[in-house]
Each structure stands twice: as structure tokens, then as C-alpha cells.
Amino acid sequence: MWQTPDQLQALLCQLVAWDTVTGTPGEARFPERLAGLLRRHGAFDVRLGDVDADRAWLTALHRCDGVADTIVLLSHFDTVDTAEYGALEPLAHDPVRLTAAYATGDGDLDGPAADDAASGDYLFGRGVMDMKAGLALHVALLERAQAEAWPINLLLLTVPDEEVDSAGMRAAVDELRRLEVEEGLRYAMFLNGEPSFPAHPGDLRHHVYSGSIGKLLPAALVCGRETHAGTPFAGITSTWMASFLVQAMEWSDAFVETVHGEATPVPVTLGQADLREGYSTQTTSRTSVLCNVFVMERTAAEVMDRFEGVARTAADRCTAAYRQACERSGVAPIGDVRVLRYEELVQEATERIGAAGVEALVADALADAPEDLRAAAMHVADRLLAACPHLAPAMVLLFAPPCYPPVCSSGDALVEACVARLREQADARFGLTVERTHWFNGISDLSYL
Image (tube, rainbow, N blue to C red):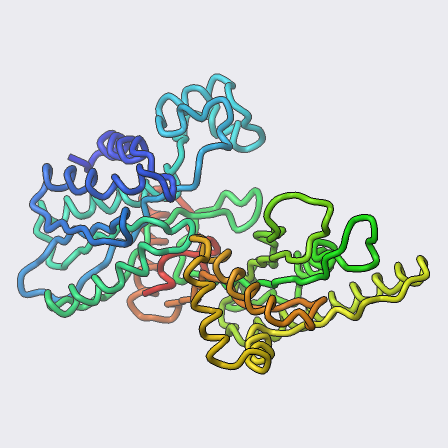
């Protein structure tokens, strides 16, 4: 069913047509749809398992009797949203029609993307690259292994929610462990179907990756002091304070790490939000900041140490600018901006309301916290900070979810042999030069294996 190029493209278009934007009903329906497709066209052992109330992971197993060695074919089926397609958004999940529209000059493509559309060599659509093409190839491998009775086990695993919190992969790890024990499997390799990403703008090379970069989300709850807009120097706005931290963190070289001759991308800000609800002439006193930091071998403790160093520099600059403004206006400042870690905030709160009080406060905060994990983390810190008003103005440093641990298989004998074989065959059979890359920079669900 899925062995020729035309059959593979038809399968890919079918998978893309099933809209699976993260957090939508389409994402929830996808596993049942794929399960039906696999069961109709093969004698695969297909199973679904709950991720949460709405979403599920899917496994499909080709089993060779008496063999333990197993390759896990890993993918995710959720995608980001489609708003960026503009007027062509209704075609975002119809690759054939969307590609035809782009080829005639419709849409807002420019540069290399416009050239790709005009060439006729590319297929466009939400999820075509990231990563339903990988899933389609895995389905084809599973079918071929079954038809030709390959003497190895192949376990296809596809999960939701890679694009936000990796809830799908984190839930599926339990199933992998169960299958390992109950089916007597030995996982020899995990092969992820993520696409090859450019290493930099304009990079047209193909890449094979033997590792996946890690990611941490250093965050800050920035607390100022409220005042009325008519008496600005009676307080200090958290948005203004936060701007110093954002300026210091964005593109900071302090977090760049180089391993195997490859460097992590510099940090960027993934969120800066006013935590006040509604609008009034009272100034903003709580602002959250989320900073993306990639890691290869650096620990979370090392990242937090660097984050604190940057935050202290930012706080010093903020304090100096604030004092200069007060001096110009002839008013007394309310205090310097302090920096403390979340655990120091807990200690301060414990001294004021006791350990039992802190435990109850955190439990209450979690009970009515927002669904978004990052907002929930900030909500807990905000409740604790409200119990310690004497700390303001301050920057409270913490880690927000998710954490993606870095993983790298470079040096493993099997991985090295596979990388060498792939590069050799790509050149000999297809004339493709494939670069060996040690770290996949897009982060991936491999972090949880």
C-alpha cells in the first residue's frame, strides 16, 4: 500500500489532511484514525493509550518470534497552528492544492521558499515536514517489515503534544517500559523521524543527527510596587524592571555551549507578560519573563548560576537608572532591586507564615492555577511573593516547565555504524551529501527516553 513514491505521497497527504494542531479536537481524533488505517491494511498489533482526558499515543508492533532486538520508530503527530498561511489558510491541510496555489504566485512566499514553490520539487502544507513525512516513512517501514518478515522487531510510536509540553512522550514512556518487560523486547535503537533542519539561514545541506539538544526555561517573576499613574515615583513598575532582564538575557553569550564543535543557539525570550488582570490607572506590579536556554552538557544548576549572574547585572542597571530618575525629580527612591531564587522566596515565606502555611498556600495556588504549566509555575511563585511584600522590588528566579534533558549517542558503536552507512548510501544511491550533526537543534521527544 505504501511502498512507491506515489503511494507514500498519498499517505502523507492523508495524514496532513487530518488536522492535528496541538490542543484541538483534530489532535485528539488522530490516533483512532491512524489505528483504523493500520488495522485495515496490515496485521499489526496496534494499541492506544491515554495521555490525558482527550489525547492518546499510538503504538504498532511488527514482532519477529524469538527475537528481542527492537528498533523504536518515534514520531509526533501534532503541529503548530496555521494562522501564518494568511489568505491560503483554508488550504493549509491540503498539500496538493496549497502547493499548486504557491506555484502560481499566490500567498506571501519570498526568497528560497518562493523558488522552491516554482521548482515543482517540494510539497507544502502544515505538518508535511514537521513531522508527518517521518510518520509516513515509519508506516511504510512497518508494512515492509511485515511483508518481508524482517528478523527484527519494529515498534512504531507516535504521540501528541510534542510542540508544547511533550505530554504525549512523557506518558508513552510507561508503555515502552511495559512492552519491554511483557513482550521481552530489547531496545537497540530509537529512530526519530524529525526532519532535517537548516543549521543556519540559507543552509541547504541534509543532516543526520546522533543526539538531541536539551532545553531549560529559566524564568523570573518580577515584582515592583504598585502606584497610581499620577504619582509614578511612589512605586516602580514591574514591566520596566523586566525590560532590563530581557535586554540582558536576549542573545547573551553567557549561555552558549560548544560540544563536538557545535554550539548551542543563544537565548531568546519566549514570553513576557503582565500578570495583572484587566486595565486601570494603577501601575503594573507583577511581570513574568520566560527565557529559552539550550544545553548540551551543562547542568540545570550551572544554568541557574549563570542566570542569576545575568539577573544581578540587570538588577544593578535597573537600580542605577531608577535612582538617577528619582534624583532628577528630587524624590527619594523606595529601595534597590533585589534578586533571589525561588528556594530563597520559600525560605522567606516560611519565616513569615511557617512551613505549614507555605504548604497550604502552595496547595491552594496549585488548585486554582492556570492550565498552562508555565503560568501555573508563575502563579505559585506569585502567591508566595504576596506573602512577602517586604521583598519588593525584586526579581524571583525559577525554572518553568518543560525541561528537555540533552541526549547524545555519538560514540555508540551501533549509532556510528548507522551514520556511516546512511551517509555512504545517500551519496552512492541518491547523490546526496549528508552532514553528520551531533545535536538536533529543534529539541525532540528523544529527551525523555
